[in-house]
Image (cartoon, rainbow, N blue to C red; front, side):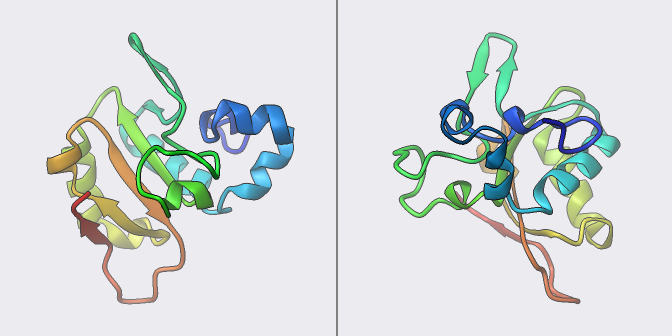
Length: 140
């Protein structure tokens, strides 16, 4: 199921979620997540969330299963508002810097993990960011 021009449902949810819920998985994702990821992709090129990148296969970078032991107990990944983005043509640090410098163009990003720490991915969380509030960058 296509969610945007370049993102399909299977790229944003754990494969077992798809087996259990099929296309209804879209109901578990925040409606602004795919839109925001598409805007980032339009700016920086190809992104992998879940799927294969080189020899690595990612399954927990988008919506995770409720009982997943990956990450924090109350991870926002389990709420469908986060994606860990891996980039082909830019570094996560470069992308994060750009997003922070152009926050008005990405109004639904509320938080990001510090890419200087994560290094190989950019954790992007969406939601409602009040007017005038800045994107929060936190240490994982």
